[in-house]
Image 1 (tube, rainbow, N blue to C red):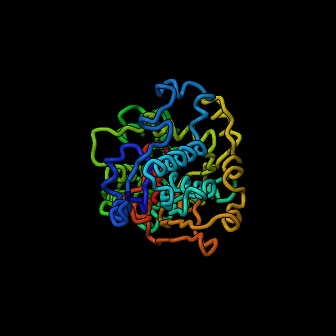
Image 2 (cartoon, rainbow, N blue to C red):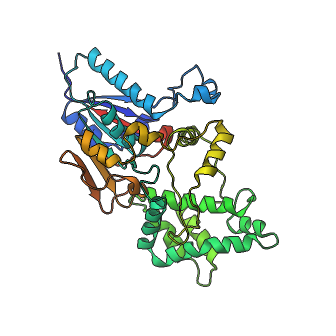
Image 3 (cartoon, rainbow, N blue to C red):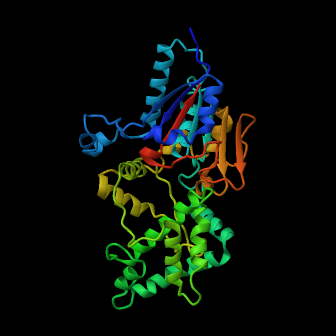
Length: 386
C-alpha cells in the first residue's frame, strides 16, 4: 500500500485551463509523489447546492450558506475523507493558497490545526479589515506602481479626473466624453467613465506581469500620444495601448458568476474597507463609508454587512497577536508591487510564522506559481498539499 507523503487540494473553477501555469505546485507534487485533488468552493462552478444556481441564490437565507467558514469546513471534511479512503491518515497536510485562497489557507491552519501541518499563504490580505490597514493602502500601491513606471504618466492620470468632470459639466459633455473614449454605448454619467478607468489602472497594477507589463503599456500610450494632445486624448491613448485598438470600448460591467459571488461575500462577511482620501493617491477621493455600504448591501441582498465578523471569527482585531500566540508553520508570501500586499503580513511574527517579500513581485509572480487569480469563484485558489 502506498501512503501518500503529500496530498494537494485546490479550490478553483476551470482548473485544467489554469493548471499548466502552476509549475511550483505540479513540480513539487511530482517530486514528492503527490496525489493532486481539485475542489471547487461551494456555490461556484458546478458545486451548486439545492439543485440549481437559481435556487441556491434565491434568497438571503439560502444564500447564507455561501461563506468562508463553511467553505473551509468543506475542505476539512473532504481532506479527512480522502485520507481515510486512501489509508493515508498519517500523511501531513500543507495548505497553499493565493489571494482570497491565501486568506482561506491561513484561516484553515488556525481553525483546523489538527488537519493542516502548515501553510503557504500568498498575497493574503488578512489585515484589510476594520481599521487594521489604512483604507488607501490598495490604491497607494497602484499609484506607486504607475509613478515608478512614469512620473509624467502618473501626473496625467492624476489631472485627468478633474478634466473629466469639467467636460461632463459642459452642454452635451457626456456625449463628448462618450465620443472621445469611443464607448460602445453612450455614457450615463462621468462616474461610469471614472469607474472604467479605475478598473483598468487597478487591473494593470495587480497583474503587471512580464512580458506585457500592462502598467508600462498603459503609460507608454499616455506618454506617447501625439505632441499637443489634450489630457483626455492622452488618457484614451493609454486605454488603446492597454486593451488594444477596437472599434468601441465597453465601459459597463456585465455580472458574472465570479462578480456576483464576490459581491455577496463582501456584503455578508468580507467587508474590506478599501477607499482613498484627498490627494493621497493618483485617484479622486472616494473614502469608504460604512453607513452607505450597509445601506447598499441591505438594498441589494436584504442583509446587513458584518464588518467585525472576520476579526471576531478568525482571530480578533489584533490578528498579529493571535498569530504570535496561537499560530505556527505559516509562511506569508507577498510581492510589494501587488496592491493587496498592503493588507498582508509583511514581517515575521514568530520563528514559525514568517513573511517572505519580493520587492518587485506582483500578484502573478508570487509564491512560485505563475498565476494566482483574485476574489470570487474563479479566483478562489485554495490548495491543500500533504
